Image (cartoon, rainbow, N blue to C red; front, side, top):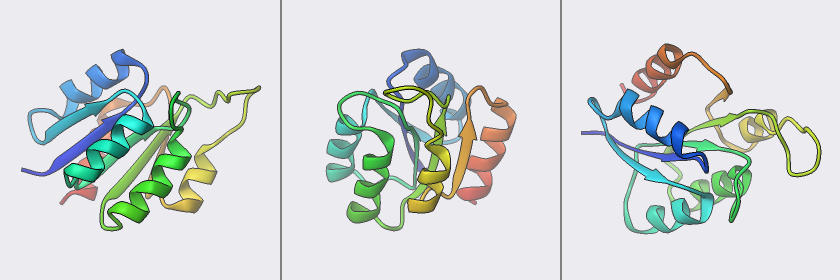
Length: 121
């Protein structure tokens, strides 16, 4: 079974994605980038779905770490567009540095499910 790491500081989003993907994939949840980085050091994942604006370690830094730790791991970045100071759109940056797909919150769950299936096929 393919392994997915879902990283988001909002528990409801982690829960939604776990419910959406948990029947078809082995899903692990992390509340921030630092927790995710520690998991990546001990477990290999086929896909990481990460929020970008989080405490401890943001998604941009996490994507950089994923590429260094496990270059074959696929990455989906998602964000509501909020920044630490003001509103800044981090999604294009995430795509430039290695996220294969990006999702702006809120997004259609069916599109996320289809994208995950396509990336892990």
